[in-house]
Length: 478
Image (cartoon, rainbow, N blue to C red; front, side):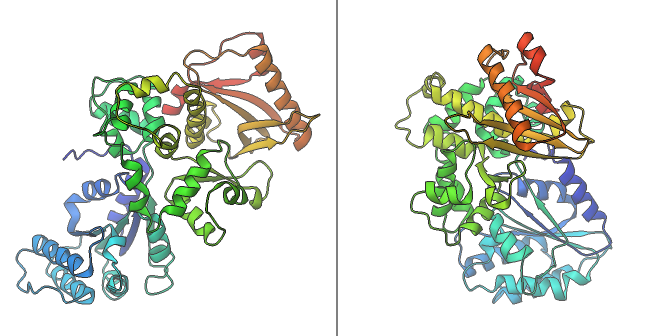
C-alpha cells in the first residue's frame, strides 16, 4: 500500500496535536465515500494504533461482534481469555482488559471505522460505546479514540449531537473534503502522471478531487481519454458509481437523489421552496434534515445572495461527479467508444464547463484571494441577482468578494479553451452589471471588476476600460 499522505496539511496538524495531547481524546472524522478517511487515519496513526475495527455493510449484530473478536485476537495475540463476546457491553469489557495489559504513557490509538454500520438494528452498540468512553477511555490520558464514517449525517446526529451518554464528548471533529486542485496536482505527480493545468482542470471537473477516483487515472492518457475510460466504458470505475454513492451514505437515498437531480437542472441554485417546486415527488416534511445531510456530506452548498435573508439562501449542486452524471451519464446507452469526444462538440458541454468551472472557483476562494493579494483581508463571499423586467434587463453576478477594507470584487468567471476576449456585447453587459449593482445596492464601497479565466484575457480597449484585475486557472493551484 502506498503510505505517503498527499496534502491534508491542516488535518495532519490536527492529528499531530491530538497525538501530543495530555488529555483523553475522542475524534470524529467523516466525509463522503472514497475521500480517503480510512487511509489518512491508518497511515498517520500506524505506529500508535493498538486496535482497529470496521463495521460491515448490512452486517447483523452477530457478524459485527465476530469481526470485533477476530480483530481483538489479531491486535492482542497473547491475551488468555478468547471467549467470543456475548454482546457489545461484553466486547468493550474485553477491549478494556486488553488495553490494561499495555505499558507506557504515550498515546494509544483505537480506531472504529464505518461506525454507522457497527450500530446495527437494536444492537446496543452506541450505548455500549458511550459507556466505554465515559467510564474508561475518558479517564485515561494515554488514549485517543477515533471514530469514522461515510454517513456524515449519522455521525453528526448520533454522535456529535448525541443527547445521551455521548453528549458533548467529542473533543475534535474533522470533515474530510476531497482534494483541492493543488492537492490533486500533487497526487498525480506522486503517481508520476504528467499533465498541464487545463487537462488537470478537466479531470477535476469530473472527479471533484476524490482520491479514489483520481487513483484510477492512467498515465500516458489525456484527460479526455481518462474520462472516456472512467465514465463511459463498462468496466470504468465511475460507470456505476452514482448508483452506489448515495446508497452507501444514506439509509433512504431517494429524497437525496431527487434534490440533487433538481439542483442539476438549475445552474444558479434553488431556494428551499424552489427545490420543493422543482423536485419530483418531494414534500416539505423532513426536507431540512435531508438538505443538511447533503450539505454536511459535501454534495451541495448553501450560499447567501448579497444582503439577502435566510429565506433567500440558495442551494447549489457542488459535487462535480453528480453534476457530470446528470449532464452526460444518466441516460447513457451502451458503451460505444469515443462518446466523450462526441459530447465535447455539443452546446451541453460548453454550458457544463462554465458551471463546473464556476463551482471550482467558489470552492477555491482562498486561492483567488491570494492571487488578488487580499488573502489577509477579512471578507465574505456571495452571489447577486437582480431580476429583470420588460423595461429593466436586470443583472447577475457569479461571485462577489465583499472586503473589510470597503472594496468589493465583482468576479466574472469564464471558461474557454483559448485566451478570452471581451467584445462589444460583453463589454456592455459588464458595464450594465456595474451600474445596476451600484444603483440597487447603493453601496459606497469601491467596486472592482475581476475576471477569472482559464487562459487569461486579451488586452483590448474594453478590457482596459472595465477590468481591474484578472486571474488565470493557474491561480487556483497555488
